[in-house]
Amino acid sequence: MNVKRVFISFDYDHDNDLRGNLVAQAKNPESPFSIEDWSVQHQIDENWRWEVRERIRRSDLTIVICGEHTHDAPGVAAEVTIAREERKPHFLLKGRRRKTCTKPAMTLSADEMHKWTWKNLTRLIAEAR
Image (tube, rainbow, N blue to C red; front, top):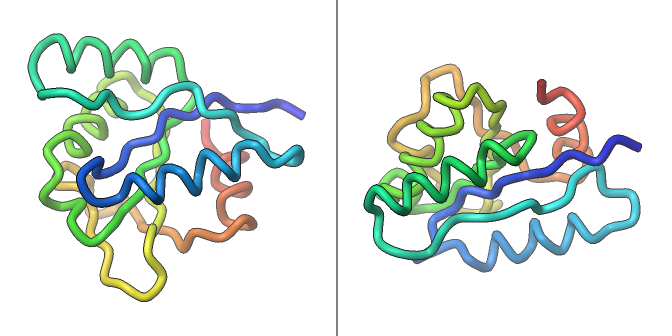
């Protein structure tokens, strides 16, 4: 199986628990992905941007976990922009089933938010090019 390296983008202030859930899924022996790195957790400045860019470059794709406040998370918006600039595939996962989840500020209208199921996750990773 070709295991893809994933960069996780998420709202650190509100959705760190969701990151933990995705990390746990990566440990599944049947998982088609590994967690390469995740969001850099310090102030957004040029050093932060450089560090994130390097981590995204080393990854095969970015998974954006969307929660209730993702639209207000400047770090997530910056990570999506960097992934696009680096021509890395990305997709959005709805992090909370019973809540209204929002897209990052820099997403395109064509960026669909996908229901977070194992079936969807494995399909989206397989389709990422």
